Length: 248
Ligand code: PGA
Image (cartoon, rainbow, N blue to C red; front, side, top):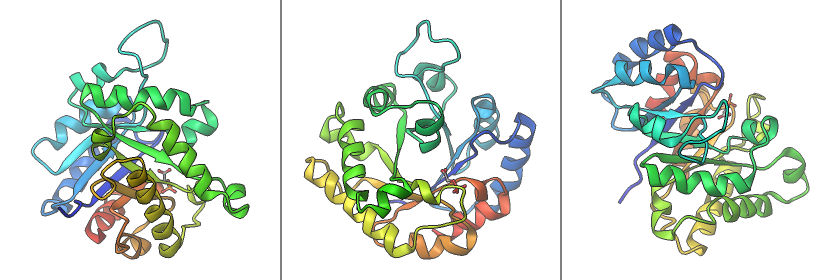
């Protein structure tokens, strides 16, 4: 079975509810013919608005984070059942900004990934190496450790339900994109590592993220193991994002 292209817009802390509404209204006619999975990841506050406005379209909606418990005394947090009740489809987990600025650990991801699956949310698990790790030749070791830790409590049979986003930290928001060859080589390594864990590595969708834009999207996504993109900066503009969807 070919893997369906998957293009996700990670808005990070951008767009108010009304700005989100405006974006969806502008985007939908531009992607009306797409057969790809198109996913928008707005702030928690704009989830409902994006869900309601995009009903009946190709757009699916993801949160940018969640807590691993279903409920409890965790001030400021949001749980999987809260997202599911809104009809959220997916959730980004382990984004490097969460790891870097908000203390997200592999330990908590080992609980969040199965919690998302158990609730019926598709986890979009982000992994990636720092510039120092790449320069020191440690890219594969870092990715291997992240996969091992973050998927530790996931049954191999459920791994194909997870979307993996490979995002080299040095390419996020820097304008410095991994070359298509670098991204392909690293994503092929991730696929092999999943196969070695006994998971159906061939059916897992693996995205590239890090300074994807209309001008480099086609070349990246033409690589045999790259199934789509997690797009930050260029996803804030409906024309740019639609062009990336079209390039996939
Ligand atoms: P960027 O962000 O496209 O702005 O580099 C990607 C991401 O952080 O998901």
